Length: 593
Image 1 (cartoon, rainbow, N blue to C red):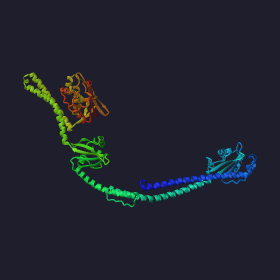
Image 2 (cartoon, one colour; image 1 turned 45 degrees about the horizontal axis):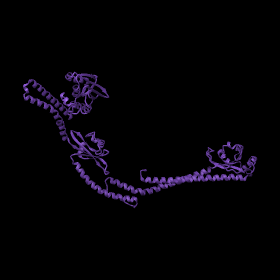
Image 3 (cartoon, helix red, strand yellow; image 1 turned 180 degrees about the horizontal axis):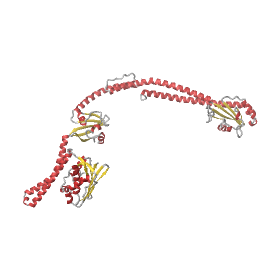
Image 4 (tube, helix red, strand yellow; image 1 turned 60 degrees about the vertical axis):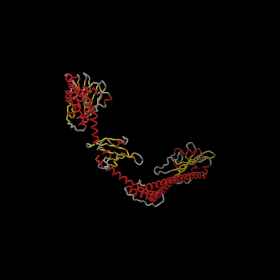
C-alpha cells in the first residue's frame, strides 16, 4: 500500500500531526502536573504555618514542657481525609508527641514507617523540606500517592521540634490522567481529520501523475498517439506539457529508426554469413536466418551460452569477455568448419553494450589448408632425405659401380632400407590421417595388461638383444583395461620401442603398472640419454625430433609419439613425459578403469 505516493503523502501528514500533538500533549500534561504539585506544596506550607500561628503552645516555651497542651491543641486541628499531621520533638530520638494518628504518639519518628527519615533529616538544618518519596505506594492495594513535608519550628534560632505533614495527592494524578485522556482524544480527532484532508490533497497531486503513468504505459506498448490534458500551470502542468512534447519528438525519432531498422534487417536476412547480436548478460538480441540455422536456434529468448554449445562449447559470454570482446575462433559442426569473428558494439553512453558474432563457413578453405599443412609442410620434408639418398646411390650404380659386386650390394641395401623407411612413413601418415578425420573404428575390449606387454616385448626382442637391454616388469596379472587391442599395442610398441632404441648398450627398461584413483597408471622408463626440458612439450608434435640426425639413423619417422597420443586421446587417456638428460626418460600412460 505504501508503494503509492498518495499513501506516502498521507503517512507524512499523519506522522507530522501525530508528532506535533504528542509533543504539545506531553508538554501540557507535564506543565499541568508541575503546577498542581507546586500548588500542593504551597498549600501544605500555608497549612503548617497556619497551625503554628493558631496555637500559642507551639510558639512559646519548650515543647517538652507543654506536651499535653500541644496534644490538646493538635487534637482540635481539623485534619482532612487526605492528610495526616505529626508533631515531632527535637530530642535525640525525635519523639512524636502529638498527631492525627494516635498510635504514633510516643514513638520515635525514625522508627515510624509513615514518616520518611530522609525528609526529616534534611529539615534538621532549619529549612522546610518536602518530597514525594521514592516509596510512594504506601497503600499497595490502592496504589495511593502521598506528599511529605517536614517543617522545623524555631525560637530564636533554636529548633523546638517539627511539624510533619503527609498529604494524599491522588487527586493531582487523577487530574493529570484526565488531561492525558483529553489530549489522546484530541489527537485521535486531529489524526482522523488529517487522513481525510490528506486523501483530498494527495488525490489532487497523484491524479495527474496516474494519468501520466497510464499514458506512458500505453506508449511502452507502441501507441504514440497519447496526449495528456494539462489543467494547471504548476509543476505538474509543466510535466504534462513536457510529456506531450516528448511524444511528438519520439514519433519523429521512431519513424527514422524504423526506416534504418528495416534496412539493417533486410541486409542481415540475405547475408551469406550468420550474424548474432548478444548483450553483456548473454541475452540474444538478434539472429539472422543463417545464424539460427547454424546454432539450431528455435526460441529468441534462449541464452547465448545455451545455444553456442550446439557449435562449440568452449565459447561462452564469459570467455568472450576475457578476450576483451574481440577475437576469432574456429568451430566444427556436422562436418562443416566455421570461422567465428566477434567484436563489441557501443551503447548510447559510448560504453560496450554487447558483442556481435559473425559465423563464416570456411569448410572448403579449411580442408584445403589442412591438406597443404599435412602434406606439403611435413611429408615433403620427411621424404626429401630418403629420396635424395636413393637417387644418389642409384646414380652411382649407373655410373659404373654395378661392376663391383660388393659395392653394388651395399648400395642396394641402402636403397632398400630407405625404401622401407618411406614405406613406414607413408603407413604412419595414412594412420594419422584416418584418426584426424575420425575414420578409425575402435573395437574396445577387455585386455589383460600383462599379456599385452609380453606380446610387445616379444616383437621387440631383436632390438633388445642387439643392445643387450635388460627388461624389468612389475605388472600385476589381474589388471585389465578397456581398449582397442591394436591401438594399445601400437602405443606400447612406439613408447617401449623408443625406450629400447634410445637406451645405451646394456641399458635397462622398466615397465610397471598399478591402480590409482580409479585409473590404471602404466610407466615405461629407461636409463638412456634423456630429453632436454625445452623439448619435452614438443615431442608429441608430428615429425618433431629431439636429435633429428640420430633419429633418422635409427629409422624413426617422427610420427610414433604423435600416433600414440592420438590413440590415447581417442580412448580418453593421457600420456605424460618425465625426463632428465643422461638419466633417462619415463613415459606415463593414465587409463580410466
